[in-house]
Image (tube, rainbow, N blue to C red; front, side, top):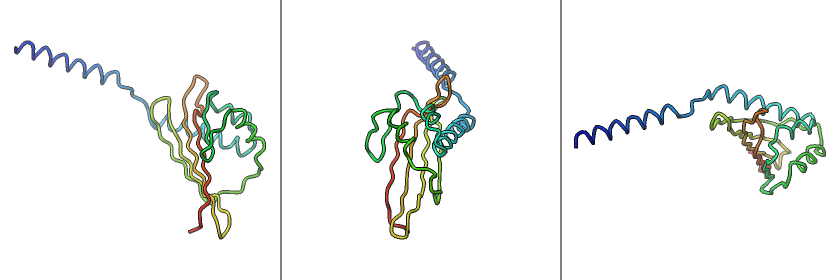
Length: 152
């Protein structure tokens, strides 16, 4: 009975050791910097109207929702990017949070106060899920919601 308990104990220790040894270890700060760089590039390309470069930073099977409506294709995103009026009005505030999930997945949440006038203000929240591919970080999902709110 003692031998059986000892064997079970050793097997549990071996399992725990193997589990811990195989657990993913990754440098969160380094991955965060990589995603931040890709995010800043994508934003710069969008602001400047470099729409081909914008969609190059998107996975081929990207899902995109704008104000709760699914956008059917990457081509439609490209068309929208090309038609949007530029230059953009400078937002009152921008905040971007970066969240690393693994060595090859992360997400960003950007909130912007777009201003408007004394009666109404516009706020936008954009969430992007990023995945690391052989050729770099790409957006696999993008959700954008613009909401009109009374000013404070």
